[in-house]
Image 1 (cartoon, helix red, strand yellow):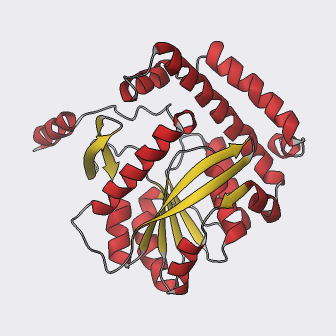
Image 2 (spheres, rainbow, N blue to C red):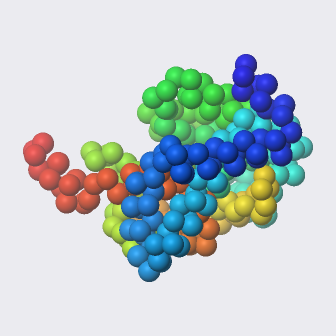
Length: 290
């Protein structure tokens, strides 16, 4: 109820709240500040300490804006999202839908990724199913599920993703959205590659399922134009019939992701312990279980 009440506040008032949240989480609460600074130093060793702290400060502003924009989204309609989240080249997706293909939309934690789904509904008529990792907090889980299911969205928990995607892909052309820059657990199947100068693991499920369902794969690159307004660039990574070596789709995704992060470093989600383990840790874990 409180979220609904706050959603009626004018957006400029919510951004004043965001400014307060950003300041307090950076200077007072210091929310995951050690992890954020560690990640930034690791990925941008060429930057000075002042530049690193400026990026961290920009990150906290982006995070706080995302929180208040999520609240505001409960009081926005499709027409509002069409104005605030512009898909710069929707024909990339539409061409695949026109050919009767489903599409894997490989997104990432850039800018306000929670607005991509309602933005999608304002541009396209095809159904979209968002694959997500359920949160440990029941309150947060219910809030995000409600936000993601507006306008007919169908969120799918990750543990049910493969089965439901294979089933739904037979129903006709639709979209499957994945935030593909998260870290697999140490025991999950993964693909290793250089990412921001660090050997990093990525989920392979998106590529495996795209091949299995004969679906196209499109990268979603989000950019902030100004506060509360975004653009999403669509980049075709692959389409049937698939060519190239195994994992070339996820490798292409990583290269585009890296490019966007280097261009807009303050807008990526630096709070994750993205490099919590190494390839050697995984190999040792497998060896100990053998």
